[in-house]
Length: 404
Ligand code: HSE
Image 1: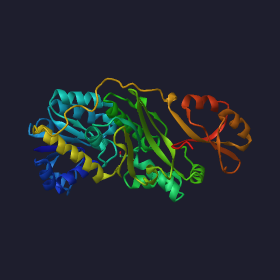
Image 2: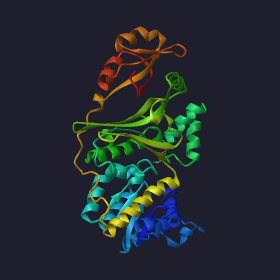
Image 3: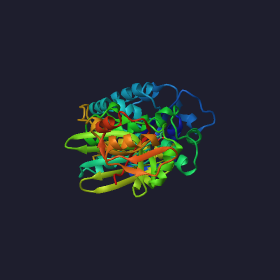
Image 4: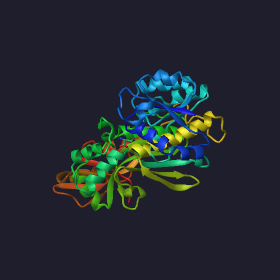
């Protein structure tokens, strides 16, 4: 079966490499040989093996009826959306790592795919190389997933790990992450939590089978985290992690991305560097954890190629693949973020201790740093937190993943 790759950047060149390197293995597993017939990119790559199949014109791919599966690894929501729509409308399955496109236009694209007898698959859009979407959609069919706590952004996890373990400054750690190719071109998307927000919206939509938009995911990034926060974290035997938290109850869902203090006894504490992980709680299976490389050329390519293999089996009419879309255009019943409940570590000036005690009631004091009063609040809703904090000058707040 002929396949094509849209984009020859980091992930695209990885997909090209994996399709070539593992050709025989894929053939053995899928029962179909995948032949890369075209790679689309505006640039030229003199001396690169891709030259033989390189095209600058997407119509070469769209007009070739033998191309049945397309990998869209261009990124963005401009040309990527246009080409994806056109490929699906031409009856070609599309597999992508493009979380921005999936989170914003996924419902529409899955609908087009269904109408045209093809697939829109996006395993690589969440958790990079970790098989996460397919297990949720198949292996956990027997479970009601109650909550998911995940580390979904490699760049911020890398930065937080370097800040914690090497005492590196934020800018220095970000520079290292960019050099290693983990960060998005615009690091704001990583650092301010937008990348994790998109991934969270995708997971939440899958869990509900209905659309959860990025606007439904309350999002805070890590740019306000300081060296002092890590001092407090160490005193509490905890680390700071940018968590994606999804909770489901009685047909309603809440989803949030924010920095959390995660204690040493939590499985997510040991997830360091660029690694991602997802701790899933199902009502039958209990807690299970998925762990691996959440970013990078070959891990992400691994997930794209796995989708291409599934899409190829589907296009060949094999019945061993799931056919229903991951979610519909109907909007999920999302509970306001104001109702979500957590405890938090709060730092105020030492002079404000009395006022803080009065506002928050039953607090747990934490050994303070110079001139500060620090404490853990009771578990409270965001709405109640806002009320209690209204008159206080808070130096720093980090939610905690523990309550005692
Ligand atoms: N910038 C993303 C990350 C890449 O750091 O996780 C993978 O989506």
